[in-house]
Image (cartoon, rainbow, N blue to C red):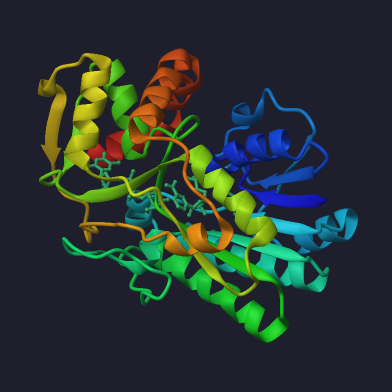
Length: 333
Ligand code: NAD
Ligand code: DAU
């Protein structure tokens, strides 16, 4: 099978390519990535057997040539602007990549007869929950940030390409991922790397916001299942039943690293901050027999060890463009 993976130089995409090459060594994977600030070829440096192509998923002429040249059996679309805070600062790129880029990719897949299109979406399209209840696939879409609104728009385009053109699209909506190679602007890698450097941990607001965490490899095993066995036109939630407040995450990191709670700083809240996410993943479990395999404790230990062992990976990132972003985002907070 020949698969186009987009955004494969980012966090989840690179973990997915690594996982797929292990599980399906006979597959040919082409990784299309624009290499934005979040894309890093070092994430794949140890891998062989995967062609890399630099390009923009929103560039239709470029996609036409690539699809004609390669003749993909399937497409897995990870490529996105993915950080909520950046979408509040500058939403334009989110619309260009997440909405127009997804549409361009759907069009190319449809024109060239792809047999599978897997759209990697997010639980954030459902909006925010109060203290009780969980998101099911039947929940209405109620996104609250430019990021989640752009992902919801892409989900609806996927639905339209299934209904109108019969393109066999499947959409997955996963909860918050953590693990190796996550860019250190997201909560867990930011706090691990700051704590390692004895720098403050900027907790937004009261720190009692809840996210439902999944170890990235478990997300990849679910995507493999959905890619091969999911029903076309369907949406599948993916989650590991691991709700934690941001302060619980912060305490776990401080404890595992033996650092002092004095590093915690409560800073100005994120505008429109979603209070709680919680995923009901009973559909994928019942229909496709998927289960997460990694406990939160094991996943966090492995992740923290990885950041300790791979200091040069994140130090290179934090000494570059990311520093300017950090100053803009947290300088006056
Ligand atoms: P990431 O920001 O680490 O990686 C995104 C990748 O996409 C980067 O390599 C970047 O260079 C590439 N990219 C951006 N714009 C592009 C364009 N126009 N053309 C080609 N490539 C482009 O993101 P991530 O955390 O790995 O998330 C991957 C996908 O999973 C996203 O679609 C995101 O919405 C979704 N998702 C993420 C999470 C999470 O917790 N991180 C949870 C659920 C869903
Ligand atoms: O739910 C899935 C989503 O999870 C994905 O679709 C997104 O791509 C991914 O970025 C993530 O979004 P969040 O906004 O939940 O993740 P983030 O790591 O930015 O923040 C997690 C929580 O931690 C959130 O409540 C905000 C808080 N936070 C975050 C940062 C960066 C802080 O308190 N301080 C921080 O410095």
